[in-house]
Image (cartoon, rainbow, N blue to C red; front, side, top):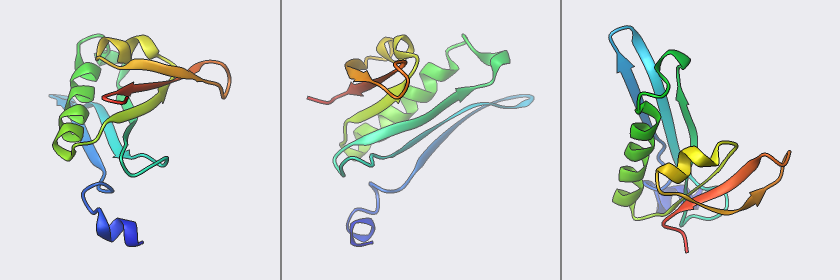
Length: 110
């Protein structure tokens, strides 16, 4: 609990929502990493199938990255779709192997 009080902004989740005239088209979630307090992680980026391939996911990732920059922290994530995140500027750090299909990705990480 001391860490939550010492770093309130770090542990505050950041949600981004994409809406259209019919409702929710997508969302993303940025959280403090469970590995260390100096990293953030994008834990969700989801776009409704009817709205995929329209740049919504890329925009949602961009919103998360703007918040990470505001907080001054790099971002890591695991994914089964590394090409999507590579287009957003992430690079593969190493293969992450729960089922040989996930990759640890990072942006702004040494």
